[in-house]
Each structure stands twice: as structure tokens, then as C-alpha cells.
Image 1 (cartoon, rainbow, N blue to C red):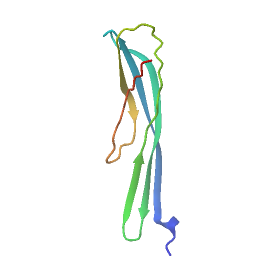
Image 2 (cartoon, helix red, strand yellow):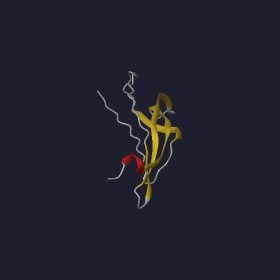
Image 3 (cartoon, rainbow, N blue to C red):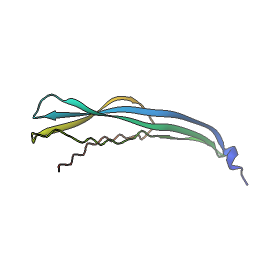
Image 4 (cartoon, helix red, strand yellow):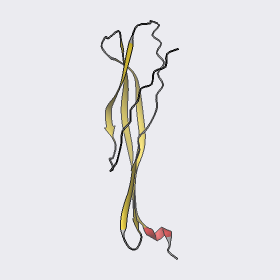
Length: 106
């Protein structure tokens, strides 16, 4: 019987972070910053020795959500954009990125 604890040879962990800003334009005017999201996450790496070979498993996350309520009372056209201003994320193979803006009119 193999001791599972002996199979893990090394592990590491680092924080991930990003600053994402939401901008709004009314009637095609210049974009103005209206909200900021400070997203957080973690990068982890675990090295394992199975006896026959050694491999490393990595995972990197950074996520968050933001709700912005537009209090502008006019019915003029609006446009929004989200911009990643800063990003300190450890990259791993196969990493993807998804940034979405969802608008609901009531």
C-alpha cells in the first residue's frame, strides 16, 4: 500500500489579482468611469511523484462580479465597456479569459 502523503513532493500558492473598470458613454459622448471591480484569486501548483514519474498540476483563478445601477434619469442612448486596467495573474497552459457586460433595462 502506497502512502498518499509521500506522493506529494512540493506545493506552492500565490495570490492573483486584477482591477477591472466599467465605463459609460451617454449619447456617444466620451466614456466616463462609473465603477471598479477588484477581482481576486489564487495560483496553486502541486508536484506529485507517483513512483514511476513526476508531474505538476497547476491551477490559476481570478474572478469577481460587479453590479452597477445607472441612476442617470434620462432616456438617452448608453454604451458600456469593461477594461482590465491591471492584472497580476500567474498564467498556466490552456488559460482562458472571459469578461462580460450585461445590461438590463427596466
